[in-house]
Structure formats: structure tokens, C-alpha cells
Image (cartoon, one colour):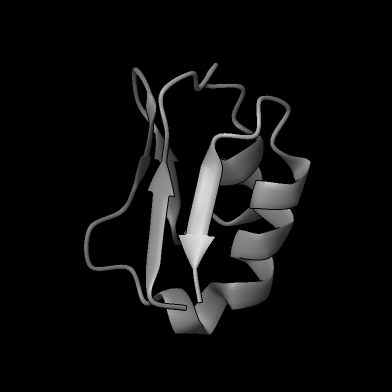
Length: 61
């Protein structure tokens, strides 16, 4: 997993943080935690992206 990002349109529902709290954080908006090791949480990132209700979580393998 090379890159993970969140595009505009996030509703801050918290699903990504519930699925992969080591990678995603909800403050005012959902953000990707800087320095997170994406390779360790690949399955969780894919699950968060697939489950996102507004389809704004993107990743590059």
C-alpha cells in the first residue's frame, strides 16, 4: 500500500476511524494519520474504502 487519501466530500461519519484507527482520525474532518504504516493495515484500509458511504477514501497499492 503506497498511498492513502481522503477526497473532498467526507461527512466525518467515523466509519473509517472505527475500521482502521491506526490510519484514520476524525477531528473536524477525517484525516489520514501522518506516518501511519499503510502496509500493516492494508486489509483495514480496503475495508474502510469499500464501506465509506460517500466513497471518498482512496488508496494506491
